[in-house]
Amino acid sequence: MNEEYIFFDLDGTLTDSQPGIYDSLRIMLAHFGIKKTDEELKPFLGPALWDSLPMYCSFTHEQCVEAVEVFREHYFNIGIYNNRVYDGIIPLLEELKAAGKKLVIATGKPTEQAEIVVDHFNLAKYFDFVAGSSLDRSRSKKGQVIAYALQNLNLGEENRRHILMVGDRKNDIDGAHENGLKVAAVLYGYGNREEFENAGADFIVDDVAELKNFLFGHKVQ
Image (cartoon, rainbow, N blue to C red; front, top):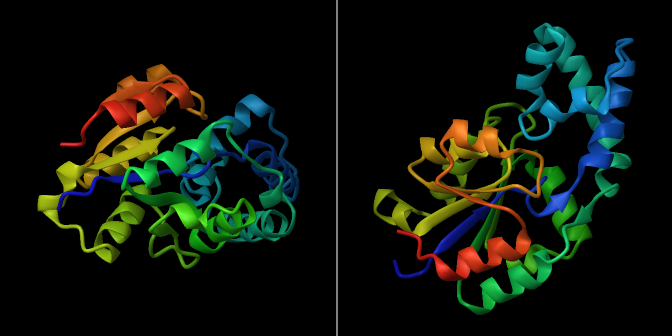
């Protein structure tokens, strides 16, 4: 395989979805009489709610089921559109495609939601595959999402040195490493340098301009 594959996270890497996610989180938590500050909501950006709610709210399984239902009701209809593509991302995707790169979205967001975002921002033409989590929780962690993408693209062990994951949270790094992929972590998203260094990110870039220089100057191997 001569082509290089680049797997992109969606929220915090391609788009700034924080406003819409925060709105939906507040409505979800208010349903349980809980209020949190923006700083307290930040850990919810990236990981699946099924993991975040027990960790940060001590929710039981039954409460998680109810909470996710409330979140999805608001997010699917309203919150998902309170979003924007980061400046410089579309030109970057255009140049990567023109250079023959194979692009994949690997997101913890449910596939149905990811496809809504991709269609809304006219991004589908850049990507060879969109992999997200499943609504039934059979595929919820980032490592499972990446494995699903690898399987659907018939990318085996011998291909993985040609693949780079680009993400903005610890779960992107962990999920990629679980599948034998290297990771470039972006500081313009929702994570920070300490988080990336502690998680063992292979590369760290500051902004979209630096990401572009890195992707065109670095051969995945």
